[in-house]
Image 1 (cartoon, rainbow, N blue to C red):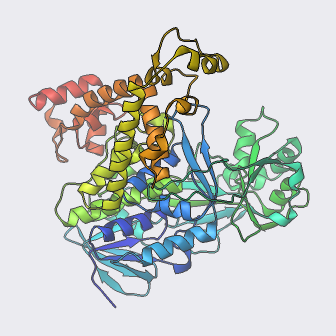
Image 2: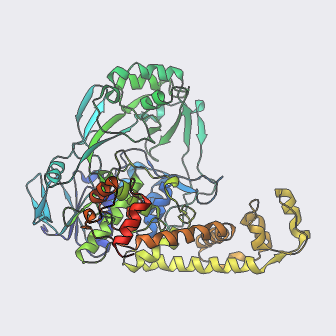
Image 3: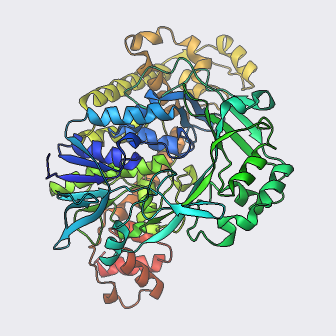
Length: 623
């Protein structure tokens, strides 16, 4: 058995898997330590990937050479592109997934990745020598040496599960929590806190009357996440919609005296944007119903996930309330909903490369940094795996800016602002969301990933082919003009002003009422541009259409991003002496000394640091 590795990954969830794969694909010898080899890539909560802003993150992970998009496509049972009624900056892909196939696909992928070894055990201590990571010690007493550790412990650090008045240790229901790491890192000077999340009861789908619910099918022409994937699923499973009612709310309220959330037994803050059902009916007392989604967990199981009904109330209260919901009159549950409280480390203790500022060679990724969601965890794992590898090679960290990726927004928010409640990504958090669309993640990120050795040559070939065809399509639209008598019937039908003279297709496409489909009859033989790879053609067409229709918005955002990025290129030493600037405000000095920003740009985004403080910093630096 190998005892020495370059990098050890603690935890095999979404963050840990991406970290292990990235580091191994960059040539490092990796050990992935997990408490249960059958739970690699486990979907602990809902069986779905993507969604609003999260779908953009999955596409970014894929464009960088990560595997979450590939695994999601392989295990998809439904695909939907959300927000199609809005502009393309808001379009967000989402898959419903087979929970068992998802985990199986992740394990197969990792087992087929050269350089990844596995060990089933729990890490109880990180070996630190001269303030530098030197290995890990497991509960079996084994010591594995390494030069860097990535901790992706999810909800397992000192995890406590709550169901009504019952509470017991665990990282997930039926699985024990992890002890030792929090206490050790705190003893070494890191700050820790507590957070809380929850999950709904799982229902026996055979006990549901679907005639009392509303069907929510997948897209008629399903898409995919991965830029390497081009086989959309041929068969889809529907989800179903139902609602709570006043009778449900009244029954739930009878359990409030036993609720760990209301009695104070839970100290950690829960996710603001994914509250429990008891929290919803308390905070939104004026609402007489709340929407619920009945989500299948796979092709070959009857287990159902009731999205929107997260709860930690007593089991009997949960069941009585469920049976008042339309379609669930005879519901049987496989296991109750529960809340889980766990340790996290405020992320302002990390650099943008997710490297600890206090301990050399220690990286943290995922829920341990205060985030919630598979996608947020996975992208952090990818960046941590990349940067652990680059750290060992004494290379500059790989950092994405806010104008390059949602991943850049997420990490900058965590590092600069910190978080005291579970952080979830939204499109509204990104100031450059017209640039950060789901359709162009490969264009933004694949060249960067290829330059560091992560994105494959095949990814670059596909990107270059798509870009070539997209430019050709734009050129065709620019030079092709159509006569009024041919196009005006279409314009009249769509409620768009008729034209009086021959007009270029590119000008017509800029009209909000018109799409590529409306104008495609005037472009003969377009399919011949890429007869062997029609999926790339469809992506190239979409990119060309968006580029022409939204050119003004895109150019404006790019100019703004270029101006702001100049401040991000003015670096600040981590040991910068802020006490040497006498006129800094007290709040600014305190925040700057605690967060230790890596650039003037990051400093400017810290709450409490004002423009006058930034001016003083620039003057002090001779700027």
